[in-house]
Picture: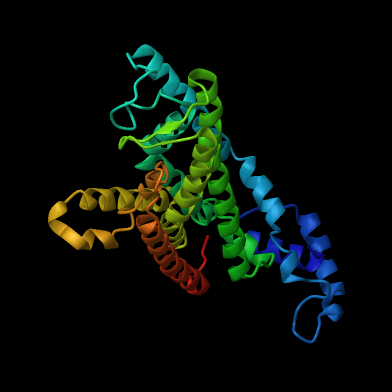
Length: 320
């Protein structure tokens, strides 16, 4: 950051009642004056490059150091162990080869992974994505640091893009931790057997690992609509809890409506209707229809919400 930019930031801090060292401010102001002759034809200070502001690596490391991120990653990694304890306390039968996915959870490691992804798919996974995206801009507003980021200056479109990419990477990392840890825990407790579906289909361990990988990728794509909605709410409010909670509530409402069979074909337009289409991968003859529909629906919703978020943030009056 140039000294001129630092001076602009310090002046902005004073305008909003944030005290700073007067001597330091005088030094920066003098430096800014001396650099006045270095302004280019486009009005930008010499040496300023928009592409060098808010670098992705810096923002990603900052978010990884946040206690929020560490707690979320820790809880997701701990969840498979909690499930194992629950099965050990209960009367689960490792030799069970019939029933639903919950009954089959202890049959093999792949089945245990499917259970972990199934029980967390309704609430936990959407909440994680909503947390990362809903908190991204709203938290800066709540900390009164957003106006300083823009005063550096970071272009608005770049700020939103860098924040969104960072949130996407954190979401992908967290969503990937669950099946990876679950598979390791499942192999240790239940062995590397075949994956068995409630329909009686059975696929080998190697095929099941590939199915789990594809299922994880599908979940990431399907939850893109939550990401887009969270980002839209994040640029629309200064309350992170409101943005995160709003996205989670919409997800819950969509799941409730999806249970109303009287809606018929209208349920196909709900963003959560194809949330569990990935379970079709645990079969000898895979039907890709629902997964394709779910991916397309999620991408369309995410695109609409993302464009609305970009438009809203580009015209929003930043006061905090």
